[in-house]
Every structure is written in structure tokens, then in C-alpha cells.
Image 1: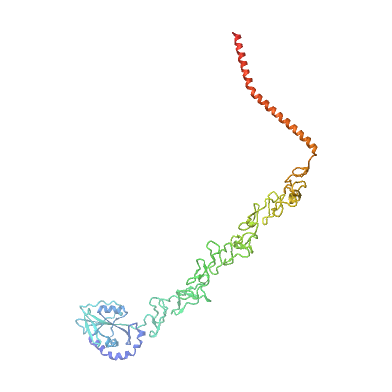
Image 2 (image 1 turned 30 degrees about the vertical axis):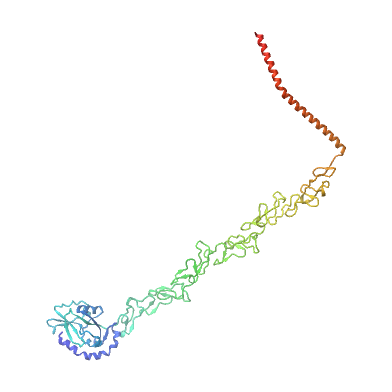
Length: 506
């Protein structure tokens, strides 16, 4: 391209300028952020970079911003940035010329057409073109630094589409840049979680959420319609009783139940882990001994205790209401008289009766085992002779009586005041009146004469016995004293006889 042609372009800028100015209002729709639309034919988008760069660096910067160095000179007239804002005097454009023949050998470098494959400028062979704010064309060494102008073809940016890019892509388009088709607005990378449709303009339908609206809201979401948020599935109305978490997908734990798992299972739930239903709190394994109800929150009543409150308190529990411990049945008020043990189920034994079996039956109770009533101590088999009363605790019969139930009378011949006798066996305590004898004074004495004769006979017989005894003793003593003398005489006689026999032999 010859330099004269380039200068011709510059001469017609003023006419094009007034025509294109009326179309600047379309810039926001046709160009990206920071670019300015120029209504040439074809229309262009321009961007001014005031930071000085070498020619090759300027080309790369334009490419990185989706364009190339300006190649259409008629667009220069659209740089209406205001002369006060243009401080640089020249700007790189996409023009290179031969150093030797720059009047006749120039060419445009269109990177968008060459897809950034243009080889770097040979600085020894070429000069690079610039234009100043007065629209004058100049040439510089390509290694010098200058501001530059980039251009690109106008089209909708990534988040607009339709005629004049008047529509915006859905903010719910997927992908990092939320891009949509420039013609129909369909989202290039699908929808973000919670939205559906080609334009990603519709929320997930009822009780659905997530990617492609493929997930179902938890059946444990609260509220009448069990709704959840279309994006992450968190339940809008909270959870039904017994569930927790944003998705209401976890049962209550740690022995809790109910709304927001805020209630504690009863400590009287049965089983090793004391578990209860996560929704209503009913104990899974029933109640421990002594408690009842679905929640095991009520003690046994009506004088019952134990597992399922199936056992009855002992009728021998003490106290006004005969109450017992709801767990083990031990009597709260102790036992009534005559009963013992924690459950008051054992009668007093070992001949005891009364409160805590602390009293002993009377030793004068009748019968072989001396038994008495365990409650009041009355003797079961009555009293032994000489005692009376329910407890056989009155030892003396009255009115000169004795024996079993004091039915026997003392002998009228007992001596002493009131004919007193032993209250058990009736023997006279002070002997008999004159003329009677025997323990009970029930035998008459013999007459007096016979009694004297008997006494004399007794005396004679007694003396004879004494004399005989004395004579016997004397005889024994005499024999004892004479025995040594007799033995000595016998020994002398024996020696004399022996000597005489010896003499006869000689």
C-alpha cells in the first residue's frame, strides 16, 4: 500500500466522524468493558492504551485483550477522548513499512486474521507506523516505545446476547464466566445448582434441588409443603421432630428427640443405651423398674412397683397409704407390727412379735414352742400353769387359786394367812395346819399314842445301830494293833524250829 492512499484515508476522517458519532450509543451493547464502539463499515471497537510499549509488546497486549493494533484508518476519527486526556503525541497502529521504500511498501498487520502467527517485525528492515492526535502518520523504529490503539470486531460480550446485545445472560448460567449463546442466550455450561431450562431462568420444581434439579428435598423437611432451598437443599421450614441438620437428613442423637433435637430422652428408659424414639421420645426398650408411660416419666402408682409396675406393695407395709419404693418394693413407712424385711413379707419369728419384731413372746406361753401371735404377742396355746392374760404376763393367780388358768384352789389346810400356796403347782408355801401333812397338806397325821410308841421304837433301834457300829470299829482296830505281834511270834517260833533240826543232824 502506498503512502498516498493512507493519507487519502486521513483526509476523509472528518466526514466519517460526524456520521459515526450518532451511533456511539450502541457501544455498551457491541463492545466489552473499556472498549468504545465506532460505527464504521464494518463497525469496530477501539481501546486506547497510554502505557508506552515497544511495537511487539503492544501487539501482544492487544491480542491478550481480544483484539489487534488498529488497522482501519477511518476509525482514528472516533478517538474522541478529549485532547486534554491525550497526553502522548503518537500511537502505534498496525502498520509496517519498508525502511528503504516506505512511500510505496507498507502493509497492515491483522493479527485477528492471522491468528497471532505473524512473525515478529524485523527491526533492521522495517519501520512501524504511528498516528498522532492530529491524525498525522509517522514512522518510528519498532523498538521504540509508544502508546497504542487496539481494535476488535464488535460482538456481544460473554454475558449478553441477542439483537444489539440487549439481553443479559442468566446470572444462573454455569461456568466461571457464566457465558451464554450470543444468539439465543442458552447457557454454554449449563446451570448452577438449583436452576433449570436452556436459559437457566427457572428454579427447580417442587421439592427438588441441586445440579440439574436432580435431588429430592428431605422427606423430613418441616412445613406444610416440605420445601427446601433450590440450591443446597436446606429445609426452609426447618425439620420435623426428631431430625436435624440443614438437610434434615440426620436423626437426633445423644439421647435426644423432638423439635431441633432439643429434648432429652428420659433417664428411666430401659436398655443399655437408654434410647428413645427420635421423634416422640418414647423409650425403645421400655422403662427401668419402677417407671411407666411411653416416656417413662411417671413413677409406679397405686401401690405398685418393679418391672412395668406389675408387682404390688406388701399389704403389711406400714403408714397410712401402705406405700412402697417404686423400684424395689421396700416399704416406705416400715412394716406393720408383726412383720419384717424390706418388703415386709416375713412374719416375726424366733418367738418375737410387734414393731420390727422387737418384742419377745412371754416365756409363760403354753405349748411346746411357746408360740405367740406375731402381731400382738398373745400366746397361741394359752399360758403355762400359774399365769394368765393374753400375753401370759400375769404371774400370780388370785383368790387362793393356782394351776392352768388358775382353775385349781389351794388346800384349805395350807398354813399361813389366806391358805397361800404355790401358784403353779399348789404346794403349801408355809406348811400345813395341825393334823395335816404332805406337800399339798392333803394327808391327815396318825393319832398321838401310836406316835409315842413309834418314837420309842425308833430310839431303841437307833441306839442298837450305834452300839453295833462302835463294836465293829473296835474289833477292826484291835485286829490292826495285834497283827504285828502275832507276826513277830511266828517268826521267832520259825527260827527256833530251824535250829533244833540242825542240832539233830549233828
